[in-house]
Amino acid sequence: MKQLKSQLNRLNVLQLSLFLLILGLFLGILCANVFKVNYITQIRNFKTDIFPRIVGNDIDYMGLFLYILGNNLRDFFIYWLLCITILGIPYIAYKITSFGFFTGFLISALTLEYGVKGLLLVIVYVFPHGILYLPVGLISLYKGYRLCSFIYRDNRANIKVIARELRANIGLILILALALLVASLLEAFPGAYLLKKTLGLFT
Image 1: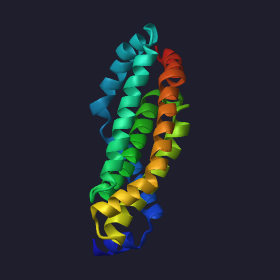
Image 2 (image 1 turned 90 degrees about the vertical axis):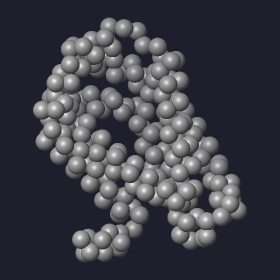
Image 3 (image 1 turned 180 degrees about the vertical axis):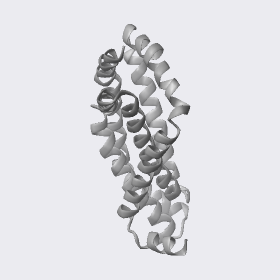
């Protein structure tokens, strides 16, 4: 255990992030295979019940857009608020690991059940909005880490330091929020349309 802790302490932020991502992916793939019996019935129920309902009904694109945008902005601003607290770095580590776990689990579960068509479903699930979500996520993680580290490691945490750093990053935060708005549009309109058409292959 001491040797593992010593090795982790030597990693820089990018190496540690990659380690957490791979760890999450491994755990997600492992859980998808080990606990398949616990969720496979639900996936098959989706195919026989949920998928046909999505394919057979009209999508409220504007309502979906507002729902996605609301969730995205809520999570986005909660993230940046946590990044100016001592909880910022642990929360960043959690987000990286949970993203890896969800990705590994989703890919494994769908390919185990649907094969190549499962991979197609994964691709459509993240396209085209993922093209924007990915850089927004990477920039937010990096800048959030730098902000939290600067406040709580390099300087004594106080209101003046926090306010100064927030002012320095407010332009970037607003640009990222705008990118989230565009990504939400892509997810709600072309993304939902493509997903609906793809689900038609499963019904």
